[in-house]
Image: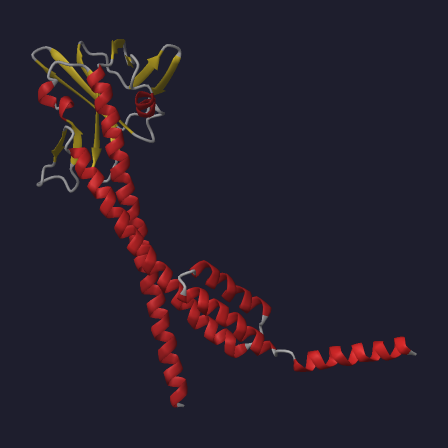
Amino acid sequence: MKKAVYFLVAIVAVALFTACGESIEEKAQRSLQSAREAYEGGDYQSAKIELDSLKILYPKAFNARREAMKLMREVELAEQQRSVACFDSMLVAKRAEVEEAIKSGFIFEKDEKYQDVGNFMAASQAPMKNVTNSYLRAQTDENGVLTITSIYRGKPISHNKVKVSVGDSFAESANPLSNYSSKHLGVTTERVDFRFGKDEGIIGFIVLNAGKGIKVELSGKSTYTYTLRKEDVQAIAKIYDLSMLLRSINELQAAKQEAQRHIEFIERNKQRSEESAAAAAEQ
């Protein structure tokens, strides 16, 4: 008998608890408040997770869902605005690094009449200082696009392939971006350009082996071999580092522009939503 009474009391207690429990809308509003607190505390990721959960768990809590949509716009807007501020800070730091790097022996060339983008090269590799040399010359444009030019002087070999090696290790490219040949006072000058990323690893190989003696082999109708000068190895490594800095600036600028486009998109949607709500209230 006592067991039956206890059982009945338990059933009644559960029924009373259920009757007095929160409604779906109230539960959704509590979840919404948690999201709002996370947003106000700058924890945008937690706010977004809470709002996504609200949408899944309480599909019929229409009032809370409408408020959640508004709050989600505010969260995303604040998130993108913080990203823009972060990108600005990083750009200032990267530009300062570039300015400091340029002081360490680079020259800048740009023909304002024909070029939209100028190029940096190491002062030691300037053409006027290497009028008789066969060497590999590196340069990067202002966007961080890195190229290396094989310059050969002597009897014609029509080279279109460059191999760099240290002992048994090597990298070789037969994928030139462009080539050019000229002749002056009986001496042929051949220039073959390779772009980083499509150079089959020759630039990276030089950078990784900057402290070693690097052998260069040019191949075409015939071959020519020489050892890369230490100053040229150092110049290529410095240009590579500058290129990576310039490339990172370009990528940060692109990311900032994407964030700004996202901000504009959110603000347009916010304005349309407000206009629709105002029109509906007038009816």
